[in-house]
Image 1: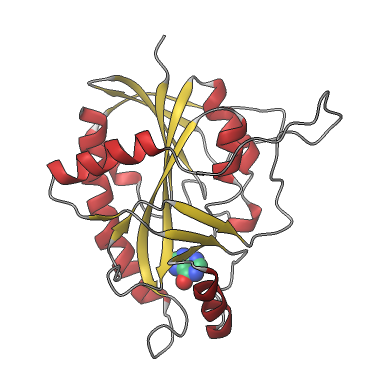
Image 2: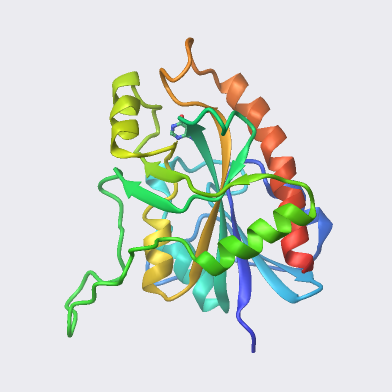
Length: 247
Ligand code: HPA
């Protein structure tokens, strides 16, 4: 059987499910505990795809409380071979304004205290996966082609910095991330990407810019601004993913 495509939906992506026929909703138990949401099975022209809501369908889980291992394990167990992850971000790049979309190419992990590996107990031998290129180039290319086909521009050379949250960053923290070479900042990209690599699944992130990062422009960041930009960005993510799944 061909490997399935899975989508890990961030904030506000649930409407997209309406574009496909839902064939099942499955509550999964894993050796790592409960995933964030039931797995939703949908029918696409290319076979079955899977969907999981990273924060839960009622958006109850903050980034540091998400059971990333249970989510990735559940998707693997259900036959997923590739994951398209949608992540809200703040931007530190003029050419990537609020509501824009990007396909990060690299990442730096500043998160801490999250269960970040499947290889924790006695290992014979200890496993160190290669993570030189954290995102699948093949998936990024197919996403870029899908974007081109539906007129959605995607920044393709961005570096994603993963912070712990749930608070937003200080201006000095953002200046530090920029000195490190980060272009985007979010709270949910890790350990998800590394866990997918450990289970040998292709993984790419679609980053949706919710706001300028702290101190990058003047003024406070409000939840209202974030919601407005996310809504605009997510409707383009829906178009992009629908095009991808119909290919
Ligand atoms: N920082 C971290 N995560 C985020 C941001 C931000 O500014 N915006 C959306 N997710």
